[in-house]
Amino acid sequence: MSETDLDLDERDRAVVNAFQGGFPVVWDPFEPAAAALRERGVDLDADELLARVRDLDERGILTRFGPLINAQEIGGAATLVAMHAPEDRYEAVAETVNAHREVAHNYEREHPHLNMWFVVSVADEGRVDEVLAEIEAETGQETYNLPKRREFRVEAKFHVDGPIPEGDVDLSDLGPDVTPTDAETLTPAERDLVVEVQDGLPVSATPYRDVAETLGADVDWVLETIKRFDAEGKIRRVGVIPTHYALGYTENGMTVWDVPDDVVDEVGPEIAALPFVTHCYRRPRHEGVWPYNFFAMTHGRSEAESERRIEQVRDRMAEFWDVGEDDWDTLFSTRILKKTGIRIEERATANTSE
Image 1: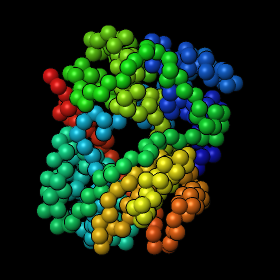
Image 2: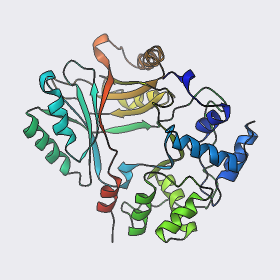
Image 3: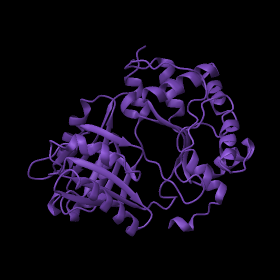
Image 4: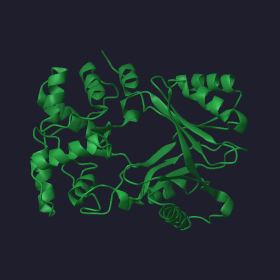
């Protein structure tokens, strides 16, 4: 699907662009959200905005509406793993890997050797090595663990042509005043809230009150906790979370770079600042197999757009070091082998202090 094929009118596009973050955490959030749209020339009232969010959700344009949980800050651990699956056994190896409940995502990617890439998510960090040992024993293939050494950016926002193209509506200042804490564990009530909202809020005029009623909690506590979690980084943002494939972003390119160690921490923020880079990390090399220590994920709505964006990453890299042809690569995903999502409940429960 190309971006121009989307069945979205101008107001739909305004909603998608405006509220991929910064949605208000207040009793009646659609009122101030609609007012912010009207200030930008998009004539919608609260009821109409609610109806459009609900329609986008029902049509699959959105994966959900509400908080985007930062699993890393909730508890447990996740890591990226690469491996080689022989062509004649590829499907069998994929089936074996996917059978592990700890494997949350698995992609086939274009690479002459490491052609299977998956994410392992566990409640106990020590379990990662056990899972990888099990997969190696079952498949006969070596795994290459690539945990994050440093996160420079995780900001998967996907804008479409239309009003508010920069998506600069931020109403996160509305709502209760909160003070971030340095608590590393969750209370039982906080765990229950995380589990309740991990797949989104009810698409209703009073989503936070609905969550409070489900939990048997006070709505003001729900508002305060969600807003505090946002400030603490346990929630990355609150808003509409689009399905990027549904918006036409079909070209998914994982660019990988062998950045000199003495400049990687300087390069990282610069690459992360490029608006089309959605994920950006430093990861370990594996000598003799994997020479790259820097990952930057880009998305495009066509092959040409994707190539232009990758070239922009290369140009920015070249401002800091002499980038050779053997110093980088792009691994395009050719098939989704598994996508079940991170098991937030298990990780939150393991990190709860009773």
